[in-house]
Image (tube, rainbow, N blue to C red):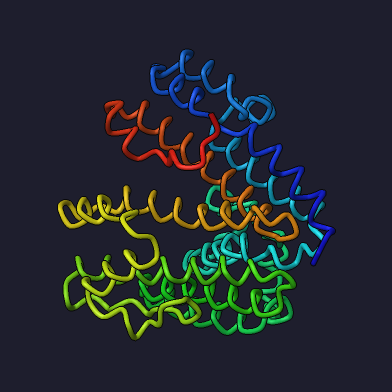
Length: 327
């Protein structure tokens, strides 16, 4: 029993109550572009981040909340290394950006608009290691994938570039989970892989047969060999969470859009963490906190983009992740 999680779990459980609330969402939904929306945003947890952001840029402020959440978890977690399973995707995203930038020999400064600050590694360091061929010193296999991706970039095979890095994220998460000191990290990684595989098969069902089929990852609760065709995905999602995905799947089959499905998938994974958080001696509370920060960020982005693009309130509301939003 890891009693050292008691303090960190208590702290993030309190902080979770300060994130985007139902009242905040309703206030934002009735705002109009311009000063009204800006003022509504300043009445949410985002306010201090907006004040620190250049020109009160919402995107910068949102990024700040996620960077801060990562830093907090790393500072209070008994074993912070295992939480890389939550943000290794951002390091790999940055490697993807760097690899694609080699086509035009773009520098890190020129790629700044595409870089995420949420990862563990400074992007300048990643770029240096990549150019020196030493990325494997950070994580086994990273340099090999990067070099292969650069070759695909040179050949104009961008779909293969994305496939390489998508697979790398999941493989690295599995490797982190294998040495994690808390069993919930493995539960979280397994859930992410299950959802990734199911969504990959669904997306492939809408693509022409000439398009390369997605490579499914091992490490989930459901073997990739069981996910053959749409019907197997539907039954798998029903097995994972009975009834939770039904409406989202109906919408996907109707219009081919994954927006609602993405929302339900995110809620499913947060739900696992929240349910496991009843154990105060587990890493689950810290995972749940980060996922709720990310959910709040997604909701704000959804609302702001929706309002500024003229979407109706009903459309915006349908894309909001309402589960696990504080009252």
